[in-house]
Image 1 (cartoon, rainbow, N blue to C red):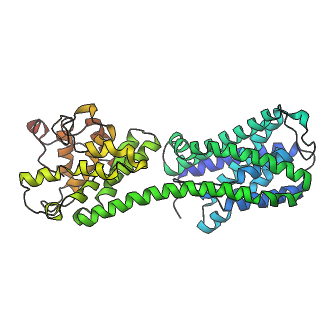
Image 2: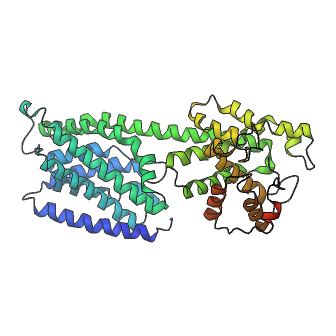
Image 3: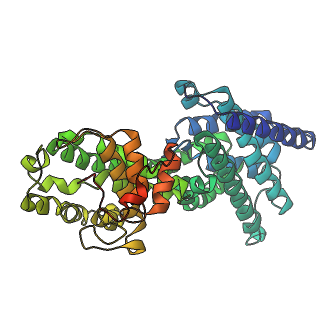
Length: 435
């Protein structure tokens, strides 16, 4: 089990205190609770959450919102919050042996999401459908509390979950929201009408009517599943291409993954959005894919390359672009791969672009790629010691590499600048070649 950060523990306790206060207020303000309905919806919500779809970072998404939304409309905030409490420990948590603090956070989030959304619904003059059913005269005004309730639930849930993941993973909650939650907005508002229909059927037919909506709920879940599987297929495609490169040049096995790791460290120091970091990681994994078109004899040569051989090696960014440019989801990484051997002074290749004209992702890759090339053994030289690597980075930042990005990598890796002969060598080309 992954160690839980202290910040997340504190966040879980804070949520628990807030949720307990809210639940006490809701229950004390409700004269009568319908426990048979609470238990039934609690079970249905627990099942829906147990079969949720994992998100790319942390957490999961499910179709339970339709059931929670129906519970709010049918039973009011107190009963709906008690039913939502069943999500504190779902089957996934039991199977993965999640920490006690995750249980606290999950249960508290459920109470806060449902309870506050329920209060918004009541304050917007939404009727409790088990008490007063809908009539034609309620339209279109009833759409106001319906919409406000759904919007409040989504905003509170996505914000608090993003903050929790931020504490767990030590990343920006805003980036997490944009990466993991923003895409779900249409799905939430598509599930809301399903919740209204479910509530109306429940009023008319009782619990048996829920069976009629099992198929739509399963279809909605399948939509989430297909979306996540598609994202998994993207990464599978990228990894297959990386394997093909490593089969051609086994001496650099693991190089692309390490470059992706260093590139991410730079990006996080720059506070880039999460979706940009994801694109950058794809670019890092694929930056050398063009080496598929270079003969193994050249790639594994232990001596100095001839001019003709070096010209051939310099073609690998163009070959890489030719390989991936027709893959729709990889189009954003094309500029980074094409320019990752450019230098800020214009002395690099493919076309001698310089300074900020070089795409930011390409400049990041240049730093990350060079760093890993220097600390790794190559056919033509052994790995360099850390002091030499730091000297190289420091001396040639501003000429070969973007100085801001070099600093970002060094901060991310906890390195200290040590330019032993920096001024003496200034203006020369780096002695450490990398291809």
